[in-house]
Image 1: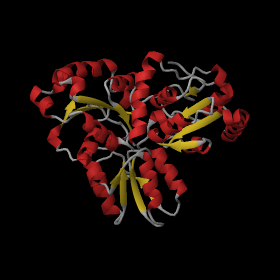
Image 2: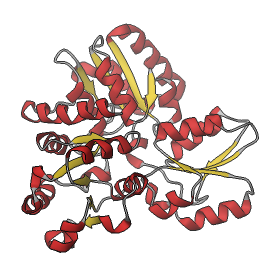
Image 3: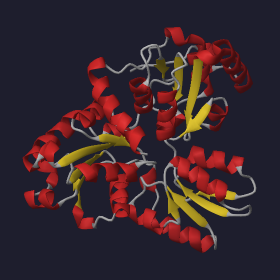
Length: 359
């Protein structure tokens, strides 16, 4: 896909862009809403109507039946989910159409179907429930819904496991192995009850014994931002900052999650930081834009990135600029909206609605 902004938007200064965005918002009035993910640039979040994690923004998208236009400042799978949950009279736009997600790309539909064909030998729908992390394509959400499963986010992964295990013996969790594993540990599973399906190997690199024993089959996928954080960073941070609080995202490796003081979704992390007393030092293991915004929001606390050197930025979240938002708001009639095919929507909506119901 090729996408380039016209010169007047590329060269406009920040104050001009802010003014144009405010003016465009005023013209649209109650017909539109701008949703912004926690990982968006600070200046984009400031001009949005709502900020949240993928779960919270999905709830808003599902509930705001009064608006005609949803401008989603996030990445492609989020805008797809908003389109799936929206009504026919609503249109979803992604201000920067190039904003994707490497983790979502790790779960290719053909690879997942190949895995499922193997898993059908172990009972398929009768014994195994697919549970997909929100970070996946609409086609995989549809696959999940079709087979009786649900979508989860880091906010409600625990609830998704409870939902799944009440109905089936095993879960097939994709595409993030770390969120799936960390959730399994919280659920009380033993490490040997969880196996990793490596899509690059025949039968996922697993034996019949592995699959028969497993209660959770985890897809070999990860977030390239959160795997940057290491247990060594926690040890070094505690040495440098006695009394520091460490909070991380559950997409981090199990070693990091287990050694942190707390872990949870982006919304959980925001609340955790908010609840710490003034003067606290808080090291955060998540995307750098959110950490920066928290540091600006709470100047009475010392808030910094856990590793101290990796600069964990999500390049795709960072793609959306004020330039993109201004262009999209002023030219939305000429923009290609995010549209999920009707033959995909129905089952994908089932999986997403289950997600919203179990939280």
